[in-house]
Length: 133
Image (tube, rainbow, N blue to C red; front, side, top):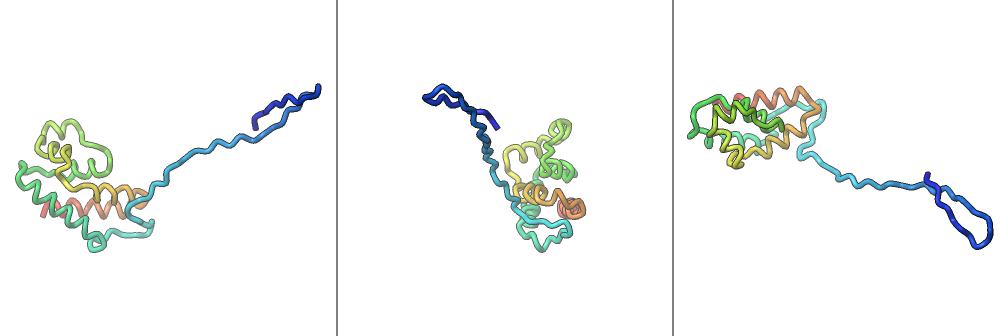
C-alpha cells in the first residue's frame, strides 16, 4: 500500500493508505498441440508432420549427402545451428536460413511436448528414421 496525502480545507492533515495494484498484461500463449504427460508419439496422429518430413527429404535430396538429422533437430528445438555445422554444410544452413524447409510444425510440436520427455524422444526417433528413408 502506498500512502496518499490529502490536504483538507481545515487544519488537520489526513493520510489514507490506498492499495496500488500494478496490472501486468501477460499475453496468453497457447501451444499449437496439446500433449499430455501420458501421451506417446504416434505419427498417424500428426499427418502434417509426416508431410513436412517428406518435403524436407525431397528438398534436401539435391544438397550434398550428409546426415542432417542432428542439425534439423537442433534448429527445431530452438537451439539454433552450431557454427561448425553452418561452415561444414552451407547448403543445409542456407535452406534453413531462407526458410525453404517446412519446419514450423516440427518446432510447434517440440514446443508442445517439452514437458513429456518420452514423447519427445519418440518424436526425435521418428524424425531420424524419416530422414534416413
